[in-house]
Image (cartoon, rainbow, N blue to C red; front, top):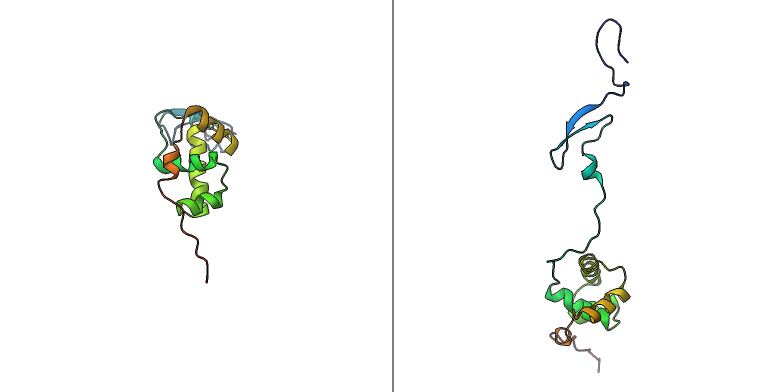
Length: 131
């Protein structure tokens, strides 16, 4: 609202304010408390990232998933914690743009992502049987 005695604009007035984006630095106009431009506020797409190849450990996990192993079995076989296996699977799913273990297993066979020697590279721990 503009007062008759002066040209003061109160905050209740919806006047656009020029700002620079906190992420990209481009200028934009806003009527609220936005600090990022509309382009930077768009959600990131889950597009496959070419050039982000799987690491050796990730390929080992993919091979074990293709054998229908559970996270607990994968963790035991690779001497990792179950939480670490879950983190690896999360990153693998993002890199390959897959949504399930089944899709990952099918894609690994189709694209030749795995090699049987990767799984045998580190044998499981021996089982201790009390006498």
